[in-house]
Length: 229
Image (cartoon, rainbow, N blue to C red):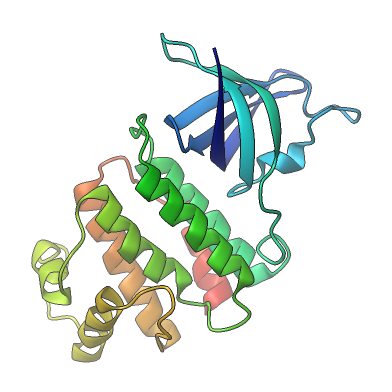
């Protein structure tokens, strides 16, 4: 049966000589896997660029009742990005977020329109933002935790859960900035030093790992630190 849905590309893997299996977070069905044949050929109908991480797609897809890998009938780019693929800081943050989303959404196979709308809105906001976006990934992870069901009300709550990992006291300024982050939203201008940003990201990742065991080592984290340093 065919269904129309919006989707957010998370990643793809090569399959055979010219095909790919692409993982997409869809509005109607949550995380789904689709096989696209011949997309890596030079004269392919659908270009591989449509499967770059975080691409927003308008889709017509097949959905088998038995689950497994499905197929895409039609697709087009829903909102072409103006800056995320072309600016090094934004593209690096995007790759990091795509990797995190690929892990934590792995078991989300049901529709969650609120979370889908949040992710899409946040990405479009990020793409259009011209400055002061170095902390976007922190604000995104903080807000996303609410949709995943484990949002913290304060820095004190986060640090209490992370106490086994941080036996010594976190710097008072970092704790205050974490409190400020938790109380903020995407439109809030949060001022952080590179060191504060790195420490808070580490805290957020470990907080996520406590609540989502599917989030393991993040390969893009080292590059993200280098770009934002």
